[in-house]
Length: 185
Ligand SMILES: Cc1cc2nc3c(=O)[nH]c(=O)nc-3n(C[C@H](O)[C@H](O)[C@H](O)COP(=O)(O)O)c2cc1C
Image (cartoon, rainbow, N blue to C red; front, top):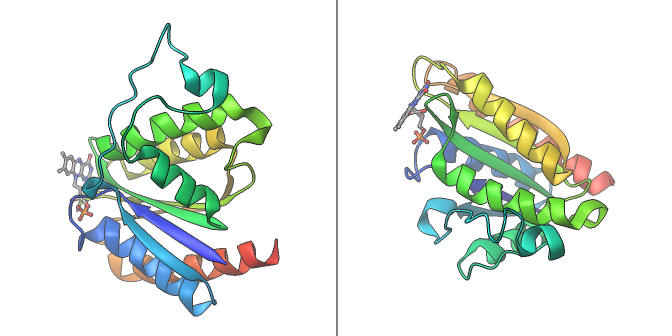
């Protein structure tokens, strides 16, 4: 059983990445194989809204662009469950998170019930600064993306600099529970 985490902060040792790492550690303790993907180190471009708005994503469930998007999509699709961890920027998920999820949901929406993510358990995380302002709207953004992917939302967590001590523990526990859940399916 495999659990993959995608973290989208440029800081590979920052709070966003630490939450994803903690979830993977929990998943490993529960017997999962894990992998971390640092999305910022990959080449994933903006959705270009091809043709009149729906290009091959809407018609065939694929994206025209030749970059790292399809590789990450296929990796996640092959996992039994996944974790998506984003920093909070301006009260929303980060630009890099949006770039990837905008294209992913178009492709999966185009596949309808055949979506590669249909029923896949997913854990969403947003990591904010000291104020924590916008962490909840950002998390709601992830929930909406998961809904469009037809994922099964396993849990949604927020963390701030103030809450990190106990939320890192929560992420570890959530990762373990996610792995047990995926294994029982
Ligand atoms: C452009 C930008 C916008 C930010 N906007 C917010 C915000 O709206 N609310 C908040 O609490 N923190 C905000 N922050 C702080 C980050 O969410 C915080 O530093 C977070 O921990 C970043 O995660 P990282 O440590 O994984 O990089 C912002 C940071 C940046 C760079």
